[in-house]
Image (tube, rainbow, N blue to C red; front, top):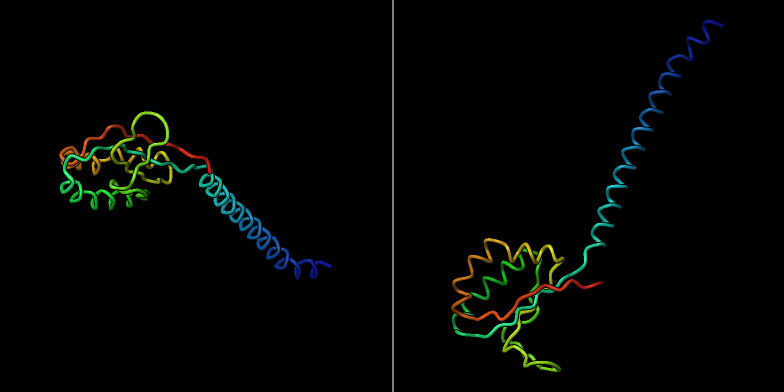
Length: 144
């Protein structure tokens, strides 16, 4: 009988090692799936945002010269310019509407605020201030 138990000893050891590998692999796979699910839920929780700028044009040529660079920076900061400064604004109710609007869609309020607090946006201030008067600028978060 002693010979038989020795013959099965390597098989038991292999079985124990294989079981440990399977448990470790299952734990690793579970962690990866959990991380992916958490990331997916976090991404779903972010609400889109829109920044609205009400402006009066002071220098159309100056405005036209810096707007393409601003739009490029907006795009690199997770924003999409939806309405050009020269787009038509139609009043419906309330006081007179602004001369022009700039409307930008953002992936989140945080992206919009980060852009407007960025060095890139600050660096455009001299050109912007010569080309337009900003009446007001705000960011609106919307539900999906």
